[in-house]
Length: 399
Image (cartoon, rainbow, N blue to C red):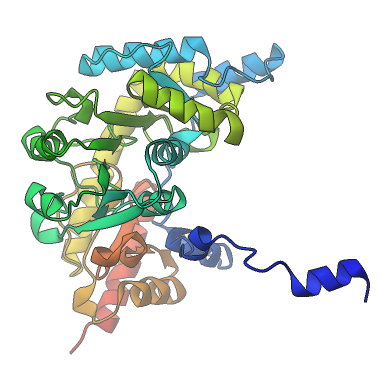
């Protein structure tokens, strides 16, 4: 055997990082793989708008490419985009951030979350995360050397993070709280008074808050409260936002982080080595989205609201108890009445009726007994999916 062959056969000891080794593969991505292998599937699984990016936004990027704008940008992002984000945050929330040193353009909110956790955490630092919650919250904490502390939420309280339970989980190692409202996977929204309780804990215990507000524009029947607007929270909050959901720009991969200058500087250090900058064509598109895309956002939100009402009523009608989500584009019905686990329900529904949903267990232990249904699908697909799900539930209902 050659030297090269011997090395390949044996491999270095401990080749895989322990941090990576302890991570479970994303339950969402696993179901994407199953869906791609089947025909005739109606997908309520992927958290992605079914709308195309507004044409004027796409056209701006095309025009920039025609002009040869295919180069790197500054690590912090295009100055014009940072000024547009600063203007947007001031106009919408009366929050003032310096576009020069308090804003960073990221490759989507997911990268912003990764940068934020790596910038603030030392090995062993603890971070409060909601359960169920977006799959990247706990994983990014682990990859940054931290310890995620899950705080349970439930359908009985509309999946809202409750301040007393948060405070009960704190220790002298707790560094931060991650929140994400409107929430993925539940569609839960916390009102200003409810968020104030989390803010009081952050002040009392000298904690940072990473607030994932990618779904901020997708709120129905109530107003979104930007966490950084709460008293004393701007200096404690790392605000994450982006363009994927409200502007139908998932594949463009552009987001932003807003925080005090020393935190943004720390995040940019990691960004310059790990990513360098967000794609320039995506940044140009984001400038156009912020400056001229608000009418399109309002039209999409109105359509999501229509679909939301259809799917929630439909799920309840077929016997899958579902609280009313107030934001994002997810419903999170209970499947406990079928006697199946969330994973069994999702797998059998996919194989028997060709409807894709995501098992709630992919989002944490408290997601068990639920499935995530994304209503960023056409109304006709939602109605057909509900009909198929009704047959499935009727066929498998105990007794």
